[in-house]
Image 1 (cartoon, helix red, strand yellow):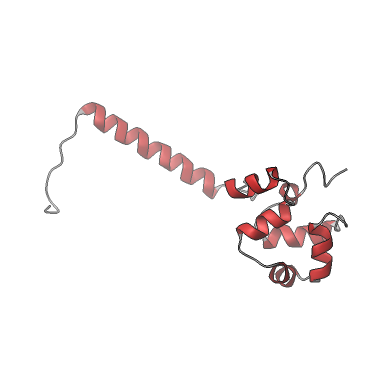
Image 2: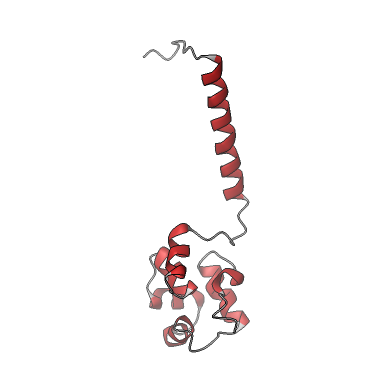
Length: 115
């Protein structure tokens, strides 16, 4: 089709196209405004299944435990203890983990983690 070819739409098809474009623009704006508290669907499903939020986010980012620990500047054994909910992790440590996983501390804490 030549680049200067005309396309004809009915008025209802044109309105539907405009509505679809506006919806997409709204979605893009929401994603760009994300403060890190948005939980991706696969992560949410893993948390619902019982995975630790840190494990769920780590898996989503395709990171090994050792790699996440290295990037967060903590020991792998300490991270393992936090992931298995054997240690709560300090606020500073959770902040490092959250930053590495591009999320917030709040999204890493579940009701089970705050008891």
